[in-house]
Amino acid sequence: MLITRLDRYVFRQLLLAVIAVTAGLTALIWLTQSLRFVELVVNHGLSFGVFLKLTGLLIPSFIAVILPITTFVVIQFVYQRLAGDRELTVMRAAGLSPFAMARPALALALLITGAGYALNLWIVPTTLSAFREYQWEIRTRMAAFLLQEGVFTQVSDAMTVYVRSRDPDGTLRGILVDDARDKSAHATILAERGRLVEGQNGPRVILFNGSRQEIDHQTGRLNTLTFQQNEIELADANKEEGVRAADMSEVSLHDLLDPHPLIARDIPKWIAEAHKRLTGPLTTISYASIALLAVLTGAFRRHGGLLRPLAAIGAVVALLALGLAAGSLAARDNALIPLVWLQATLPGFVCLWLLLGPQLIAALRPGPALAASDVGS
Image (tube, rainbow, N blue to C red):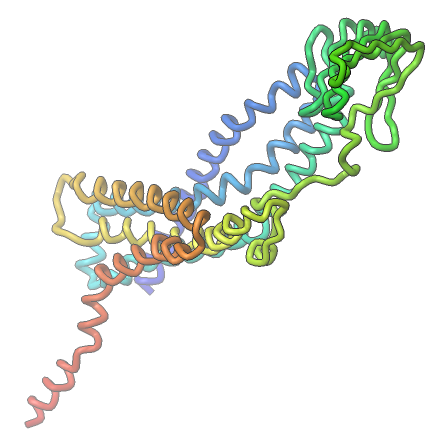
């Protein structure tokens, strides 16, 4: 019963701390990353609800990245506090083994690992797909209706629109359109006024009393065509409606392992991304094992020590750097994918063996049986 209560006591502290630290770091990252979307609200009139929905879809990807790190930080901090308050000393005096003291942290690490797999394999790809689809919709359909007065608005990569002023009834005045969607007929269109309407393939603008200027690449002449009324689709007419290239961060694990990207040379990157999704949650156990090894081993010091915590932090930072390097190398050459698995799992096995190995060896020794036979003789 004592061990069960201690397990619950330590596990509750760890779990609440992980939730608090993860929520705080996620909020901080969300604030920094959402600043690039604030312009849509301030300058383009996008509603705050759309802003929250768009940026909120990024939160699961933030959580998936920071969960292993926050787990390490929390285990290191909580166990250091327990050591400083002499609670670990009391547990040792009560006869608790290293495994018994590490059990709550290992249970938390397994719980976070399961959550990491749910995020990496299902939640993050789904939310990132919804984010990019929503962003695509805003860019191709809504951006045209968010034209600013006196500002060159880039509706797409190949089209820029300038509007001098906008009347209360929605009439646009002093319109300039730079249309480079057709590389062989780069056109500059000027019009006195126009109106935005929603067409079948996206937004379009009806222009009145204007001119279309193109340079003839064969003769080098400037050809000018005047018109009383003309229509221009602001969506990219060279792309099918609603079709966009899927990024590897938003596709399923099955599609990553059996990749069909638009560019064939990206196949190794997709396969490496699949293995990074599979190994990412396992780093939680490795980081937790490093923290436990640093706290539960070594001589006890009344005023604590900085060497072991700093060494643990340095080891985790080194593993993060190695993970980035291994992922980059594996994306270039899939033969190096085992490096990704070794970086994620080997530190955990080593630390757990250093922490729990002596206890396992002692439990497997036949010493007690031999002693009993000696006594009988």
